[in-house]
Structures are given as structure tokens and as C-alpha cells.
Length: 192
Image (cartoon, rainbow, N blue to C red; front, top):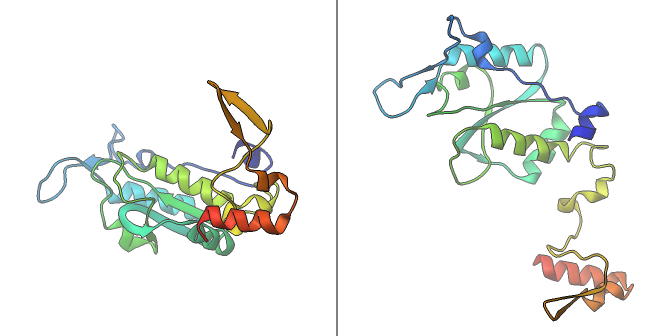
């Protein structure tokens, strides 16, 4: 990612809703209506941050939510092909006031069947997976594992090593030079 940003193939910007707070303490969290544990991030500062990030761009807006659509490589590929700009709305605490989702057209996305303390890690994960889909980021698009037959097991030199008296070898098929058999082996290992 660092190299992609330095090479200007990718730009990542951050918009902190606190910068759009209308109080001296830059506070943007409040207790939820109807009670309950935790705090909720107010809608207005988040809306202002999204509006600033979006400007006049036709950006894909992703709202991170444990109950959203499952994020996948194919979803990332679709977003990378359709949009030049992407905005990821990432919350904390109990979440973000739901009215934000009514102001902008956005899609709720989840990175997995679990809940984290904040949206920073899912946002980084999404940036990484989508960036891999952009030509030039990986250097070689053939490196996209999802677009080729890749075994979950890979090997490199040396061909054999010994650890605690036990020998560990590269599977003979990979040393054969028979690409048809190697592809069949990879598919079998991948479970295709």
C-alpha cells in the first residue's frame, strides 16, 4: 500500500467527524435514545464528513456494519471496476446514528460474522482488498490469487530441509516441470 500511495496509484484520505463537531470539546458521541449501554456517534458530524469526502465525486459509499452484506473478493473487484472513489464510513462504540444511512445512498457491508470494537480494522481490510484489484498495484495482475488456480500450500527453496531430525520436502509434482499435472495438483489442493 505504501508503494502504491507513493507511486500515486492509490490515494487514502481521512475525514474525522470530530472536525465537524459544533461544540468546543469536539464531542460527537451521545447516549442512545430509549436507553441501553454504550454511546452513539451523532449523525450531523458524520454527514458533514461524508459530504466533504464526497464533494462532487461519484463515490461508492460503504457503511461498515456487522449486519451488512458480506464483503468478498468479487465484491471488491466489482467496486474497483465501477468506481474511482470509495468512501468507507467506519464507526465506534454502539455505532453511528442510523439517520446517516438515509441522507446518502450507501451499502451496508460486513467483513465477517463478528463484531469488533471499531471500524478501523475493517476499513483497512477493505482498502487493501479493493486496492489489489486496481491494475498496477500488485505489479502483476497474475498475482491475484482469486483469478488463478492457486494452491493453499506453496513452496520455495531449498527443495529439502531437516528440522529436529525430520526431513521436509517439496512435493515431487512441483519439481516435474509438467504444467498440466501441476495445475491438476493445485486444483485438487484447492478443492476444485
